[in-house]
Length: 453
Image (cartoon, rainbow, N blue to C red):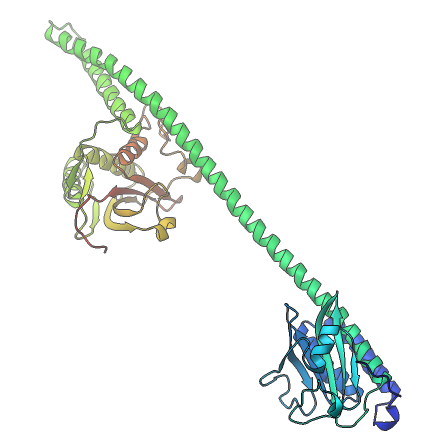
């Protein structure tokens, strides 16, 4: 309990009143720039209490649960280690004089510690003690404690000084706490904003994929119906042309018939491309060695068009399950596109490699591919590249940058349809002036028995 005693200023070598005021004034000025609780506790112990004439000072910090005090800063003979406390003392609330102050939230002055049963003797026993709580917003933030080797060393003057220091400390502690809470709220807002941004982007990406999926589904249905109906008409035209050829021919009839046959043939090819895009082509997949087919295609292509193809084929390539005729059509469409992209010369390049797609590597592969083993076949050119405005449209049916009469624009959409129907996909990479690369992903044939490369 607080024992009122006469002022002891006459018994001690206190600094002058002017020095005391200067110390408190300097503390009030420096208070705003102290950045943390730890710095505050050490500043008060060394630069305030120490300079006010107290021979000894220990400041304790209370824990969040309000159950114990821990030494946080000290001044005097008990702290010869600057800002380091070796084995800091921990005192439960209610134990000893310091614990009683924390529990009762009231200051205590003890004139003679030897007569106080609550005194916890230190390595250097003292005779008198003063203890003041740090009470902030209804909670105990800590305790300021000072001991002295003389009896009755502390009185009202010392209590007023430490209480003033404690009040200033509490004001700063509340400001630091509010600053910390504001920073935490700001960080929470930043995190929430980041999450919202990611979710918004994700939602927009999903909406775009859903729109694309619905668009392709509608186009596929329309294409399939149109293709079958148009194919019936072509069958009638082709049949009648063949019958006309058996008849006695008139002058000029041959050219007319050849024109009809050519148009009929182009129409039939268009129908096959439409069906491939709509994923309604009847494919007959077979397990085959992709490298062998690429080599055979390259040899045949070079002989027919006298245009070399550069090859970079991986060894021990996994077998794939794909329709051989569809594979040849896909290769032809991509290589012809590469050649058309290099009108001044240049060789298309075909590469093959094994790809093991895992969930952790999903960002590296097309989103529609499920994890597993794939063989990637890339067709590259050194042409002018594809404009960004066109890159998102190149797989749309009938999209073409060629003049009227020089293509139907079904090549890449046919390739996409065949690859999806085969369980894979195609991806295009291009920058204007840097050429283009088309990557085909073929699922590896099941039960191939190869290890991950």
